[in-house]
Picture (cartoon, protein in one colour):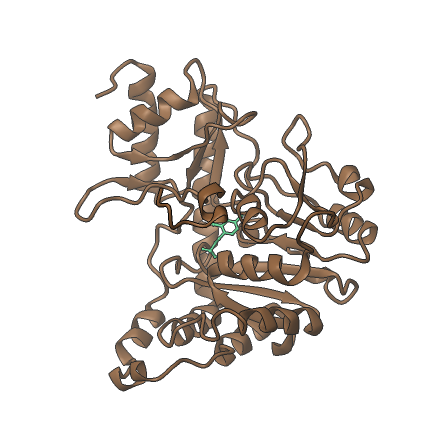
Length: 361
Ligand SMILES: Cc1ncc(COP(=O)(O)O)c(C=O)c1O
């Protein structure tokens, strides 16, 4: 704490990212929902071909080549696509663009358990927030999102950390019930669900869908996120971007991302592999008595048997395996476990069995 900090800095509770290993530390990292496989070999070729002279110039502010690749991939026009430095940044821009701030503003409606950056951005930008409790089974309460009076809606679908998917028919109900406000559907994990709200775009001008190359395209380190929506929504995002940082996507990220997006078959195969591992490990944990809801993401939301989630988290950490534990109401008996390679997940199962047998070290 410094006496030079302003009130916002003193009071804000920042987002806490999953633990990053120290350089040289050998661990199995299943705590930040990254993809365990390297990106397509074509990405390697692009990296090798980047001319050093290019780095001397500012990048294309509007990420044209990425937006063109995304538009083709997503079946929209380039003016319906916005790119940013990870979907975290795109979400931050969207909060500033579409949701009203200040005392007395209609609150943004979000699930009480969802991506923990939403309340942080709301606080940072003075957007009043109304948290709608998930139902007992951790599903989003669609009727509450339809009846509560708000100034916008934001939720992740599939949701995190619960891993559960809301049907498109339910998403559509929420869109219909909030015609005068933006409904932001954060689809960071949609590739693993085989469903996207983007199919609703021709019908709903108030729909903004965000996505990322961090999970399905194995590019978390490149930081490329995007939003898709009506061209006028995208124009609004550009206004906010250009009031903050005109060059959010750097000149290495742009060709890398454009190439990775064009590698559709590779991405499909990558996603298929992860989903197969996910379903196998979910079954293995259920066979051991764990509670594991049906995941539509690249992670499991899993509650251990006979031991607290916190103690399993700590013991796994002691064995060099990082998973995510949230010490928060309602979910404190669950772990969020990213799907790694088959070998990594087998090591996780072995560690889980050893912990159950009392072999902690
Ligand atoms: C629900 C959700 N949205 C957005 C993000 C941000 O992804 P990125 O900034 O890497 O695009 C994450 C990251 O884990 C997430 O879980």
